[in-house]
Image (cartoon, rainbow, N blue to C red):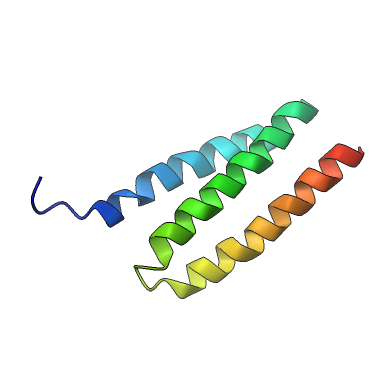
Length: 80
């Protein structure tokens, strides 16, 4: 498949995973919220995987901060 920029296609799975994660962290179930934070971390990695070769360094920095926030969310979710 010549002419397809596979790196650009990575944005779409990252987008879908982010939307699923946002849905999961908004539900009442503690277990689903925890899964949502883990899915958010997967989306952070996907965005970084796209952002570094794309030279989108502000996005990479944002996703790094959000990953830390998601780890914090997992810890808080487990305490409650």
